[in-house]
Amino acid sequence: MTVTLSPISIECDFDAGNILVRDASNPAQVRLAIRPDTHSEHFQWFHFKASGLTLGQRHQFILENAGESSYNAAWDGYHAVASYDQQNWFRVPSQFDGKALSFSLQAREPQVWFAYFEPYPRARHNQLIERAVGLPNVELLATGRSVEGRDIQLLRAGDGAAGKRKLWIIAQQHPGEHMAEWFMEGVIDRLQHNDAGVQALLAKADLYLIPNMNPDGAFRGHLRTNFKGKDLNRAWQDASIDSTPEVFFAKQQMKLHGVDLFLDAHGDEEIPHVFTAACEGNPSYTPRIAGLEQRFRALLSGLSNDFQTVHGYPLSAPGEANMTLACNAVGAAHDCLSLTLEMPFKDHDDAPNPLTGWSGKRSRELASAVLDTFEQMAAELR
Ligand code: GEM
Ligand code: ZN
View 1 (tube, protein in one colour):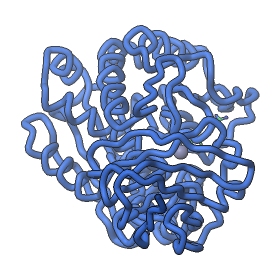
View 2 (cartoon, rainbow, N blue to C red):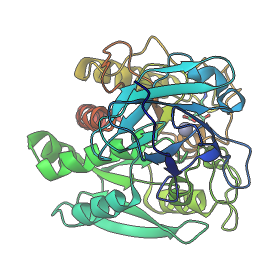
View 3 (cartoon, rainbow, N blue to C red):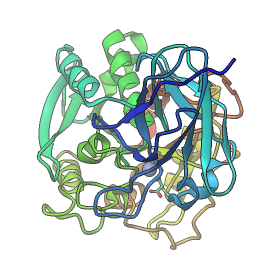
């Protein structure tokens, strides 16, 4: 029996949307491409809605320029995420042939969303900020502005009393790395829970939190850059109000308040594991900092099955660190423990979840273990 498939419509004119339609005339094989960041050649993030699906029929979607993306080696072993309701996301088997990434599904609903990772919507960010500032132990300390004028909130958890350690977490400098703000939601969830562990942490330290460093890029469906096409994680030596006001704001606040520990939350396209990168290549690196990095990794490994220390980036040679990165720049400027936290776009292969891969929920759960690690280390940071 021949089933005539109704026409498919593809849209991405929404928060964090990114797709280009090449040819959607064949509903069984929809030809698409990923759009580069504004004023930049970077691309990898995609997020779009397909409507007009025929129930029970298989529809294939082909991202024809995937092989030219920023991290084109990252498609091997990668599976796209899909959702029929924008709440529950699941992985769909995907294939990369060196040029195009293809994925398909047998439609259970007439519409579906696809994305590179579970998106963290701006509306949810606004609700997160509102929830956070409503907590008795959290305040809105300062607000910066992105290039396009979106708010960049700096929250402080704790009473700001003199003598307490200042622990900073910033997230989503790279706008396509949505797992980073899911991680920040986990931090706020734990603060709201306000259990004994959180109270013990806030008795000796305050948390300085920037849940989204790059709201323009996130809203525009960018992978890597802000509205001016700048990679914020390469702007920590020459941040400017004009082209990188996001970093300029964060650095200004760090100088004002001080930093005893810095964690920069990111996502990694290629490595299917959760890991950290640190400051071993900094000219100012010391055995004290090396010891704190080792301690952080050992404690977190014991607190979470979703963290490991075997896989990660190659170590930087002594004195060879790229000082334009937040982790290295902040570690040097404040002589403190400073780490980049990497969560995968794929899965954490040490504890895989075939249905979801790495996800927003797992990012939130990891945050809780990181706060417990902070609590155990707060007294030894200086
Ligand atoms: C990475 S951080 C790169 C760190 N590299 C090494 N070798 N320490 C970046 O900015 O490129 C963070 C990210 O994008 O996830
Ligand atoms: Zn990143």
